[in-house]
Image (tube, rainbow, N blue to C red; front, side):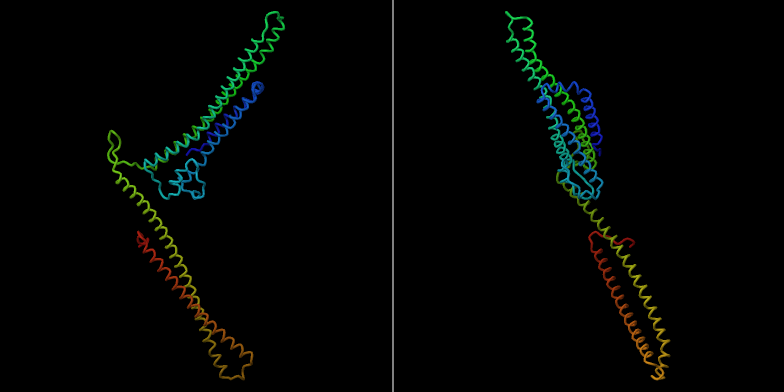
Length: 384
């Protein structure tokens, strides 16, 4: 989907150009602003708030686009990402759905209508602010005109032509016209600031409207690609021939059941693959145990050979009696006998433990194979 960055770029460039124009004409705009600082300041404040609101509208489209892209690509961040505000109904409906998304035409139209209503509702405030700027400009215009008319009436009513000096009469007329001129300044300055503010805010609102329309169009294209038609049969002149409601409901139920079956088969395949990996690991461990048992057997054979070699020596020593051996030799022989007995006992214990481990591993393998065989819809293992 299209991100709203380029629309933000256009709005920023236009706003910078407008500020540059204000900076160039600041010397002429400052006296016009001071003609009525209260009303002109109100117009500038409304313009500032409107600009911030329009920028906020466009920026808020970014998380919505990111949420849709995350759902379409099924990335892992889907479960932890914050739920969108504009697409809240859509997030509630399809946010945690697994597998391929499929919507009916009625559901798609309902979603699009709700999102379009939310987009229009978000633009109401910006439209109202544009109208408010024009209204404030016209209000200042009529206010200034009323002051001008009242001041002119006071000046005309205060003129005294009979028995007055011409110079003093014109001086009074000049002083009296200052108030009407101030009223005209208020009228034209507020009109200027109001119309200029509405022009700036109108262009920004136009860009925001284009960003919203592009977002809505991309969303409609994506939802159309995952929507299945609710009608069947050949097309006729009045439209497509719809099927009965119960048949459509049966077809939708069948499609959901097929999706569930597909997910179950996929899970069974994953479980079977995991079981195969367990069998391979078990085979490797059995091979290792076999090698260990073979090594222990070789060690026992070597010990038996050594014992057979020592037997004649022991017999000769036993035949000579105790007179030919000192106490140290006899202790050494006793220690050797105990060491050999301990070695034989440890070898027997190790063989027994290895046999028990092999039996437990084989028993676990048999249970795993039995559990796989009892799974619903599970076929024979690969390679059988």
